[in-house]
Length: 411
Image 1 (cartoon, rainbow, N blue to C red):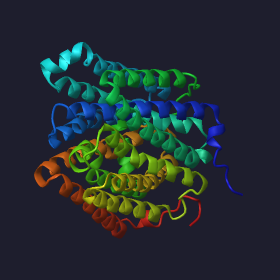
Image 2 (cartoon, rainbow, N blue to C red; image 1 turned 180 degrees about the vertical axis):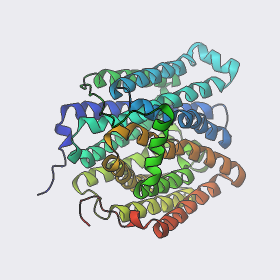
Image 3 (spheres, rainbow, N blue to C red; image 1 turned 90 degrees about the vertical axis):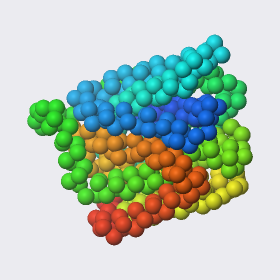
């Protein structure tokens, strides 16, 4: 009997969860576009664009393990609420920097923006594992794959709407963009408050702080399927971080406006949403490992072709195709984590995953900025795509368990 593709959406709390996630994603993605365009007004140095990403990644990495520990000992809904409030406050600060004709930035340069992004990274570190762990408490275990697909779809839709809205608001006014960003976070917080709280899963035994932090790491590294999947996506995202350089591609290679930039930024998520809508009805869980390897290789090819494209429409198409491939990989990896992680360890295991992947987007952005300065803009992205394909080949040979993985319950 075929499973219901909409089963998770029939769950009231999951609907609030998904809508809140959607609005929060729109806000954070929109903020990324606005910050990037604002920095572009001060400098065209690719390294400084990479530094934006690194400034967020450093506190994220340093805080992630402790944040995962907290997500396993404190009610997860409370953590999400507090972290969202923190993100809202620092978003309001970005708005405040635009007041009085940008008085703060005229006197201190772009340093205040980097400071805000630093603290935003801390907020992200706490919210990410709590979202992952809380979702598993909202839906029954048999619906994890379906809920994971819808959760990813909500994120991807937000990643389309956020850059598009951000690009429009960059034209209207950066200050208006930031205050809209702030209001979206407040609405997301309000809707999230309607979700019923859940008690924490019972721990099998008490642990001190050091033992608790190390358990998540030990679990991930002792599970061949999880560590293989995380490593594959880690290096793919690390070397394929061309998104950070999109403002430069838009302005210097494709000679486009902020609208063109926002379309480029949204394109991967458009492809991801289209693919996710297909996967809701046709889940990629039979031959899941093979499908994941194929998808990451396809992502690398798209990055190489994007780098050599000088046509805006073609570039948008290639980025959309890369997003479709990435969506397959993301949903398979997230389902692996949901299905294989014990309930009482979800926060810590998610934090390890976030160190691998949540921060690798930012570190990948820094790597792209650094390589772009050393090799040039186009060669740096070609290099990243080529390295991604090499990593897939290495994983295919070495990770036989992942290669033969099925998640549909069949051998």
